[in-house]
Length: 339
Image (tube, rainbow, N blue to C red; front, side, top):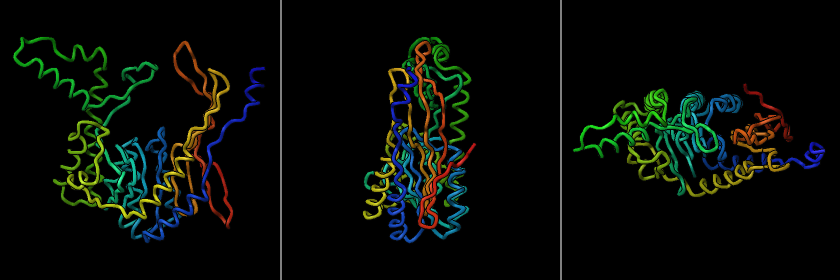
């Protein structure tokens, strides 16, 4: 009976606005004088290694160009995936220009480091790239999920303890207390990840900055200068860091905001609640788009709340990548399999 009731409730689907986004992309390409590729993440989307295969599919149809424009809106993700994405983009152009109208954080900021020029709109910002790590031995939050730990947070705890211990008798080693909450292997892994982050930044900057000292200084600043991982680095501050930034043309910015609005509509959560412990989610998380082609990842699965573990688990997971193509004036839809 319960299953029959669930079947009677229609599952919500997110809208796919391929025709509208293609129209806006073509306007952008016409104004900029070169092809534009879009990369957009929803709130729960992130830069990941699967993005590389999706981008490769787009670039294979696009070919090689003197200048390639990349519109990017993302809260970040995997820094090593950022390096792979930039490497792939640089193989298809002599000059890469990043278009940043809004949020471009963490691993997304890393992607912009590989661009010759960064055009920033009035609401645009980059962020620090100091690495946080979600380890198998990380602490657990109130929802029984593993939390991310950053080296900067750990270092600040140690500095605070040391400052408060000055002039006092030698007390306990702070690590004795810290290890009760953060496993020592997590601390070692985070320290290693921090070194990786600096190395990735220097590798990305090397595509267009030939002075190693300048590249090293930018990488160090992005990893350790700012008091918060999400600190917004605006146009003027980005210029002070030594990045090749410039204000974005207002017409280009308006079209990018229009494109972001379409993607935001596509990326809205489509949740179907069957009862208090069962639901279904449909949500587009990552979107890549170029001329006549759009590739996106859609989360499509059932959720069940397991009370004894205080967490939601998934069932009937049909999530995956989808591809839309404009062929002969018609739109063709297919699954795009990435393992």
